[in-house]
Length: 280
Ligand SMILES: [Zn+2]
Image (cartoon, rainbow, N blue to C red):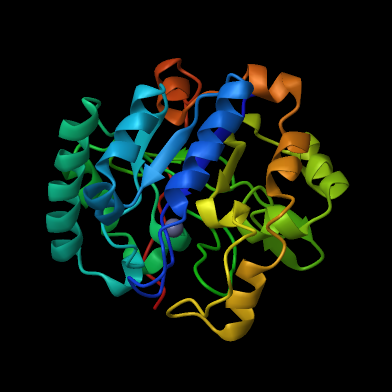
């Protein structure tokens, strides 16, 4: 059973007076991965790569795949195709020069590849991406794409989409293998969902440096409510331990970055998904 370990490398600091905490945590994540001999896919925010180029180079030099997580974390439905294209073109080239490795993968900020932002597929193709891991194929209070396939598929231009693995609890579908879901759901439930995953190719875990940062003091994250910020702030102490319990020996052995899995032919024979007309 393969599992791709992914990190969305970003930070939520409200202003420059808050010290940067993500570099030290990212290095802890690298140590955690090294101890398990796991190579990950790390989706990096372009803005962050400009200011912390040394860290990005360290990640690439350790053998992890570098992907792109947009330039400034603007949700796609709040961006324009033109602006996204310009920023992404410049930022992708910067990171490729920096690391000496081509970037093939894209992850939209907060699963914001939805019916309202289908334009992004063509821009991704123009910019030379070959896959995306940006869709939450269900209704969701922030961003979701109900009706999109729950297993990997092709956009009509040939870009591979690897959607977030979802678990159903009553009427809710949630991406149980990452972020606050992974932090709050009990481990027996997570392992239960992993075992029941219908298409094992689509199994990927996602985390951010802040998911591990139990020493950070509380602040309200820009653009979110106090309740959301509190949920994001609590329950961080046990994250490494929790992931360790999900990453069984078997999962670690079969874990590989997305691009390696694609090149190994694990995503061949996917069906094309045509989302039809846009629903406003
Ligand atoms: Zn993000």
